[in-house]
Length: 401
Image 1 (cartoon, rainbow, N blue to C red):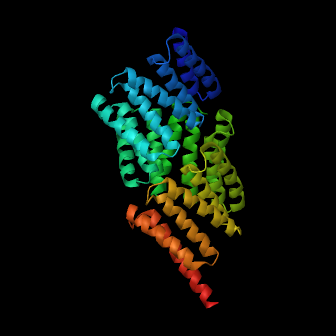
Image 2: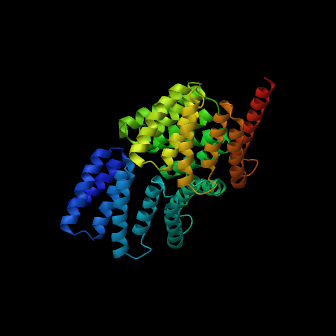
């Protein structure tokens, strides 16, 4: 067992350095050793399974990680008190995996239970409680409940700055999440500052090249693209992609995230066909790794449809956007803003094709969703209104011809 414990600790350390292949090999040996020496149902076996799941999750193999976390959780629930911190840690990590697999309902339930138990055991200002609050905020954001998530993100950053005055990787994650929220609302100046702070913090605390640094760079690049600075965004995303390929491999889901960001930068620069080529690769990766019905695959379909809609291939753009819409309607709750976003882009494509009645119907449905969920002043509502105005102008111009 002492040798297995050493292997487990080494595996986690290697994972923290981004050396996933080495970490997994050692983590597997640790699990096998504990199963042989102390048995399947033992706290040390559960720890080894939990840590192996952590390593596998870092490589984007979410279904495998889910099975490992569930086995670790079952063992811990059998052997430990319900409020034991090890149970709560596995519960929270399992939530992150099932969220990635598209089960937002179970993810939220696990995080709410974990947060409540950590508050009871540790208090509101404990770092573990703070991390769980931030994870719950991210889950709410993924579920499209932006106002609730934004408030929790801001609270987490405020507490994190107080707890970690010299910086911390957990604080960098919180800064990133708040930056994503500010980007969505159109506050690009604040978002850019938050992401630049996260990049600098993780480079100082982790390494110049680290998976978290790459994630920070991608988020920064998205802000630059959305604020119209595609020429600045493109090298940032390329740096992130190259870093992830070196650290994680070209087939890792996170490398696809960087390619998606690079495609957005190219679209901002007017290279719609180049963006579409990259997004076809992203779609292929997400389909093979996550399946046909995952919300992240729907996001890749959506992005590809947007790019194609800026090319002459309007029929294909419509087909791809309708596929994205079908997956999002099936996978997300009614009234999710992502459904509205795809309806909006479908309306834009139909407008370009001169099918104004169909386009207006899609845009009006999009508007009903975002007004009900986010209000008339939200950036998403303004985007739909701009698309409706463009449609009416195009329709009036066609009528005069």
